[in-house]
Length: 257
Ligand SMILES: C[S@@+](CC[C@H](N)C(=O)[O-])C[C@H]1O[C@@H](n2cnc3c(N)ncnc32)[C@H](O)[C@@H]1O
Image 1 (spheres, rainbow, N blue to C red):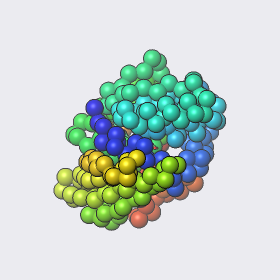
Image 2 (cartoon, rainbow, N blue to C red):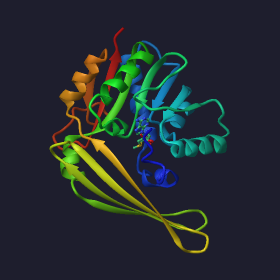
Image 3 (cartoon, protein in one colour):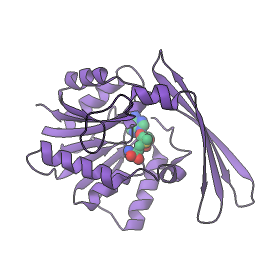
Image 4 (cartoon, protein in one colour):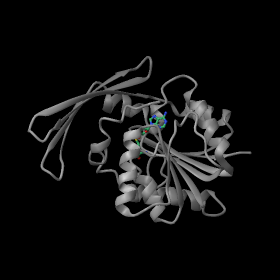
């Protein structure tokens, strides 16, 4: 099972502190209002990570299931649930290409380019077919991807360093180097995490993650093949059409049964 998030799970939320999950959830709820006859009762947050969207939607009254393949990301989600006193979210360790639920759900969301982590031929179909299988008839699938523009012009072969200090004053450094191959459409991220220990020394942990760049046509083709009707591709939470330099596409599809 994919585990490229284990080393960075504990600093993941800080790395992504600028993501406004509340505004993103507003978009998801607007999509429910626009495209569903009634509010879904049960929502699956696929590749939920540390559960940021899961908790946001839970706070808005949805029954939530969060599924992710990384044990360490799920541990962070469990800890957050515990500290918030929430015990009615079902977190499952599942691969999005072959997950099993107890029944169907009214909507599936899959946020922050998790779909780009499906890198092998056939992965998209496996994931989309499972989403279709577990959606109620006409249920919504809402996901986003990093765009080809972002892979080519933003990730490229660039490198970044992130620094985080925990509540005990210990520092973690995370350096990552991107390597995008235009032919294979695969982008490797080489992560090195240096964590300060109690004695002031640093432990090092390395991980490699890979994302795959998908064109809109490819995504539409695979959605259709798996019984998911494409509703739209948007460039922002305002349902605007994506511009050429758009870095994230927000895509909405509906399960036809
Ligand atoms: C960029 S993070 C997004 C997490 C979360 N959706 C968010 O908004 O913060 C990508 C997530 O996808 C998960 N992931 C990657 N491949 C997966 C797979 N095949 N099945 C399930 N989860 C996967 C990773 O463990 C990670 O938590």
